[in-house]
Image (cartoon, rainbow, N blue to C red):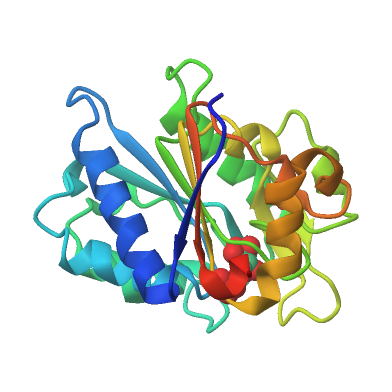
Length: 244
Ligand code: 6PG
């Protein structure tokens, strides 16, 4: 794997514009014969990134070939204010022509357990990504929490040790609005061809600098440090997160 590429921008909007340009180039130049699997992040940082994709690159990206997945979801109905699916629908998916059967939501259902929902998502991802060798996604977008989590891989949680399943139950800390999570695991994330971390804000500085300066030792404290990419890992960060 190539060393990570670090891109520093003055603010979150410049970061979003640069990441969207890179994503559009990556997706547009992919070989035309295969579907493109894109894994979206939750949280707030991806919002402006999604808007640039849906406007500036609406006529550039081969949307009809794209399959959408999520790196994690809060285990709530898809119309819930905390849902990552809802955020992506509102900021990207309702404005781009991706065929409905190519949007693979993590399926909350009344009475369905976290384990059942995770198993269903694991099965759906394997069905769509099967036959791609040891690659899952063409592009995975991730964020970074102030505690160094990514997706719903939170510090000190059992899912960090998952080596087989691609999707599994996760749990956010007591401070989170929604603790029950479904998350992709390191085996799924690290099999992505390209990974884009989008990181903005001074609250991310400690984990970001620890990960960039010494990812090996940072891995014990900050789960995002253990994310890699089959081809290229990119950090799109703003100056307030990167620091002096
Ligand atoms: C989630 C995200 C999570 C997010 C980070 C950063 O479900 O919350 O998947 O991993 O990327 O918490 O969130 P912000 O972009 O809002 O800072």
